[in-house]
Every structure is written in C-alpha cells, then in structure tokens.
Image (spheres, rainbow, N blue to C red):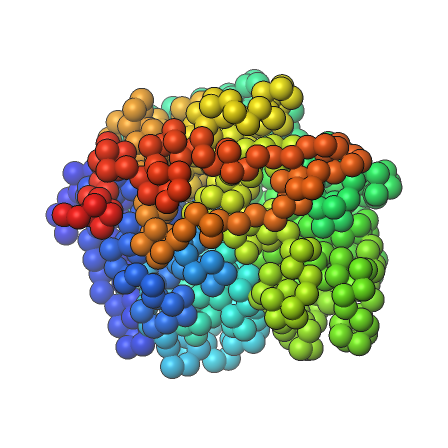
Length: 631
C-alpha cells in the first residue's frame, strides 16, 4: 500500500475466515478513516458494508470485529481503549463494547488497526498475530479454562508475557448472552454479549505481538497537549475533587455518596437509601476496602489517572491471591442492588465475573431479579436448587453466581441468558426485570439524571452508561430541579446531542470515559487533528460525532428496528413513582425526551429514520442514503 495521505493509522485491517482458517489483508479507504476514525464508528461502517442484513448473530456469516482507535499506541494520554463490534445476542441488533488495559495499543503494534472475523472453526482455536503474520493455534486444551488460567497458558506456550490477549472464559464458551470479552485479567468489553459471539465461533482468544510504529501528523502537538493535560490534572477545576478521588480510590470511591443521592440502584431499583445501614454504605467503598487489601495501583495504557488497583485478599471468607479492585458498577450491582454489604462477597462476585467472563452488570441485575422473584414467592427452594435468595443473603447470591459460572444446575443455566430471557422461559417475573432493550440496566438512575433514560432506551446499544446524552455531559444531576424535570424544555435535546457528539468522539478515538473530566473542553478533537492531520474542530466535530451515531443507528434500521422495539422497564423511569426516598414523586417522560432528540436531529419521530437532508449534511453516509432513499 502506498503512503497514507492522512496519518495516525496503519491503514490496514485483517479479515479472517475461521471456517477455512485463512485471512486476507485489506487496506482501509482513506475517506473511511477520515470520516469514521476508529472504534465503534469505523466498526459500524465495515459491518454495514460487509455483513448482509438479518444475519443471525451466531451464523458463520456473522462478523466479529476488534477495532482500535487512532489514540491507541500513538502517545496521547488516556487513550488505551479498543472496541469489540458485532450483532448482540440479546437484541439481534448492533452491538459495541469497549475495554481498556493494553490490548488496543498492542493490536496496533501487531500490524493492524483492526481485525474482523467471520466463519466458525471446527475446533477451539486462538488467533495469533505476530508482526502482521497470522496463524491459527489449537485451543482445545484451553477450552473450559478460566480467563486467568488461559492467559498464563498462552504466556507459557509463547514464552512471552508481553503479548496482548483478548479472550473469553467459560461464559463465552457456553454462549451466555451476557458473556464478556476479557483482557488484562480484569478489563472487560462486556455489554451486549460479545463473548457469546466469540464463543459461537469456537474462538478462545486473539493474541497480538509486534513492533509496528505509527506515524502521526504532528507529534510535537500531541506532546504539547499531553503537557497541558498534566497541568489540568494538577490545577484544573476537577483537580481537587473528581480527579483526586479517582486517582486515590477509583470509581468505587463514589459508592456511598451515590447510594445516598439516589444514583445507585437499591433493591432491584425498588428500594431507598435507608434500606442500607450507613456502615454498609461505607464498607463497600474503595476507601474502606483499600485499607485492608490494596497491593498496588493499576493504570491502563498511557493513563495518568490510574483509577484501578490490585487487591491481595488474604483473609475473610473468599481469599484471592490477586484481583482487580471492583469498579463502582460492581459495588452497586453486587451491593446495594441486592442489599448486600459484605466486602468479601463483593470482591468474590467481582472475581467470579472476571474469571468466568461475565458482564458483571448483567450478572448483578440477573441475581437481583432472582432475589426479588424468590422474596415475592415466585420461586421455591426446590426451583432454585435449595439456594435461599432472600434479600441481602450474601451466601445465596454467591451460591447462585457460582452455579451460573459452572453451569451446575438447570436453573443457573437458564439464568445464563439474562433476566428477561429467564422470565420468558419460566413465564413469570417479567415485571421485576430492570432492563433497557432486554439488557440489564447499569447502576446510574434516570430518576436522578433524566437524560439517561433516552440514552438507555434509544442508543443503538441500549442500557449503556458510557454513551452519549445529557446524563453526563454535563451531569444532569447538577442541573436545577426545575430544569432537570422540565420535559418540554427543548434545551434538553441540545444538551443530549452535545453529549452524543462528545461520547462518540471519545469512543472512536480510543479515549477513556474519564477524558471528559481529564481533558479541557474540545481537546479530544484537537488530539485527533494532531494525530490524523484533518481539522476536526468546530462544525467538523459535530459532524464526526453525529456521523458515528447515525452509522450505528442505520445498522439497526436495516435490521428492521421499530421504535416500539426500544423498551425500558417502567420502574427505572419512575412508573409508578416512588413514595419514599430521594425519588419521591419523580417520573421521567422518557418518550418526550426521545421525541425532542429525534426532532432536533431532523429524524422522523415515529420511524426514527433520519431525513435525507440530515444524512447528506453529515457526509460519508452515501450507502445509508441509498438504502433509505434509493440511489
């Protein structure tokens, strides 16, 4: 391939066929790199072009992609995230899930910006990418192993511990619909079930090694921005609060305050903060657990925050030699959501999620659903296999989670596909499934941040707290009450669209979610411009973000998505409203928020189809225009 006119990319991707164990090296079109950049945006463009509509998620023709961002391996701070793209086993629509750690940069070092995989291997296999050369290695001896055991076995086989490994655990092998793709032992691309897609292909892992260097447009500008970011971390407006908190204690440092203000879900979204004793609120914070077990800090590639930590748990009920400190989502899903306040239980459930390769949000949501069903008499001890699932029963939660991990009972195996699938199987309990689009909701409450309702329900990947919308950009929790709950205020849609643009750029660039506070406003677009050499500032920033969002949505439209398919559990949006606690009397008009969002984008509110003018104004979406409006 000739020299790229734009920088920041290798310009190549591998297209692998596991059925034949062959691959071809393809060149990206430069206009696709410029228009879609990387991550979910570029992944959506490739899958839209390469995968036929209505392909089943587990068919040989179904495509699974691992896509880096231009920030991976090129020097910017907080740019270590890659994205796994596919159809979701839950929604049968578009899915993207991203993860930090080191895999994204190491994928690029191996010689490719992305790897796309179709076909089904006849036997378990792992893909080894070594300086651009791809081989297929027998993984029969790895099948059934947990993630950590698999990593160590691959390290030993290759005689190299510096390789990047993205892999599945037994959950993915079993094709659990909330199986994650894991890397670096405790980093996860989890939401929407990408691990099940990987398992359906008999693909245990992708392993990367190499020394490829990537030329950027303006390295001095990248370094200057990094210096600016370091100063921002020391003296910017977030330096003494959120930055310091995450640097010292990670996301789990917010647990107690999030429970108190009503952001964390309590008792399967039906409880109030007072249901949890104050000592238990504090017990599950990182601040308290760090005192007992913190061994060292952990940081993803090029991250100056280092919000992670490694624990060595050598006491209590469930000793673990080394484990990643639970993130806030784990604290809430395994804590307040089940009325459990035991530190050892939290860490054990978090460890099981990582070792067996589960999306811990969905695991926690499914366990809480089972608890509510049991507590309300829908399940008997005989049906649960003798496991007492009363609220707050830590031993019961662990017993059911272990059964789900090991597949040791019919009840546990049915729960492997999530709460909604289980409710439909048993014909009961659907009213207790707290989901958006069939996927268990994350631990941030739209009754506190109403903009999250639109994001959870209507993002092309539902039930995501790291996607766009006014829920976080700016935090709707900080808005005045009369503004936050005014569902006729069209400024809500403006804030929502601004948030979408910001989050899409975050994900396509390979940046971490925390770049929202670790970067001054507008800096991510400047980083992309310095890397690639195309001016993404001003109106180009808006086009870039909305083009990405629209490309992901267009994939779903082609799959036949209707507006009524975008569902959300009523309890999550205050239907009915709470009669006690911080959300007393609050109901979110989620459909009104969506109407205003679609109107502001110039999309039809009933069909969610973008107008031809809206599509053409963004550029780069000619294939979508042709499919929706004819050539």
